[in-house]
Amino acid sequence: MNVSIAQADVEALCRKHGASISAIETLHSGGTHVVLKNGDAAETMRKAFGKKVIAGKVVRTPWVRNG
Image 1 (tube, helix red, strand yellow):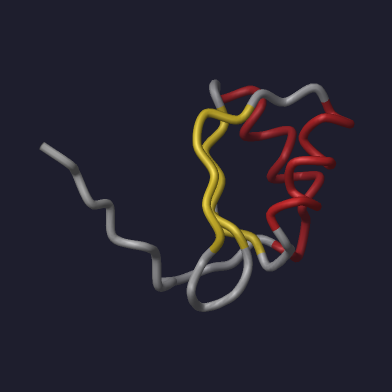
Image 2: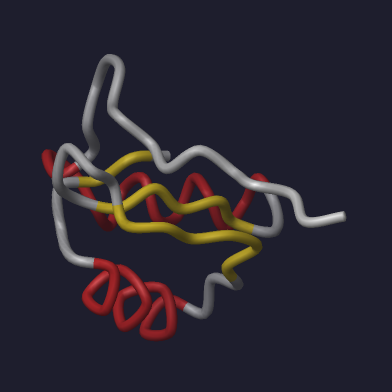
């Protein structure tokens, strides 16, 4: 999910709620993209982030694969 708060704050809030992060990145458009390890954690964090969840498209960092 995409949220309009800084990556460090997302990590801290996930720790507080016991939600394990699978992947996380700062968004070019501002905010953070975070993937949680399971659906229950995602639902918990969706509620915790509340109105900070970004609806719609965001600009993400393209993945570059070496090799």
